[in-house]
Amino acid sequence: MTTDAYRLENFVADLRRIAAAAPDEASLLAEVGPLAQRVVQARDWLRDDMYQADAELGFGTTLLHVEPDQSLFVVVDSWLPGRGVRPHDHDTWAVVVGVEGVERNLFWRRLDDASRPGHAELECSGERRIGAGDVLLMPSGGIHSVINESARTSLSFHVYGRHLNHTRRRQFDPENKRELPFVISPR
Image: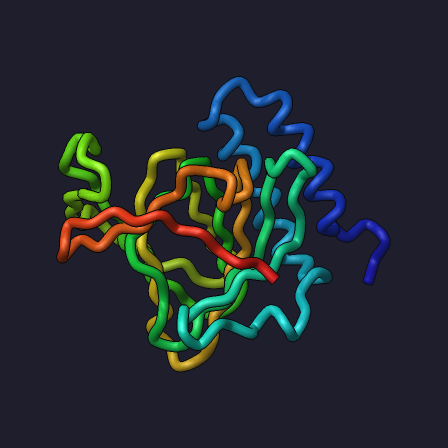
């Protein structure tokens, strides 16, 4: 490997700089997206254990970096074949880059005013497939669901503005019009 490879530690340093200087979230996402894509291409952070996922949940999360104040959270998610996660938000911005396989993202729009605790009305508003090297930029407030429709475990690289367990992240059940807390357990 050449000495000029863009490594995870380079990405984290750039991420800190961008987060401190970006005038707004849209500018931050525009800068972080290409750098996340670049570190994914380097793949020096990729390990075999990142393909492991919780059979009950259908996915696994491997921690790569989190700041001491819980900001700038970087993880790799593995998605078992035919599995995924129902609609959820992040309560922070997100950048997702496909590493291996193809993941189908469905985007959702909230129809109610969020005034009733535990209640949510959603409708599907679009979709996008994310393959290796593809970048998905999600501003705060976005709601999506993910499914790996392939026969192999897929991987994606995720960058968030805050550790997801330190936000008001929610998961949604559109059929039953429910809103639930959503906490993860990164390895």
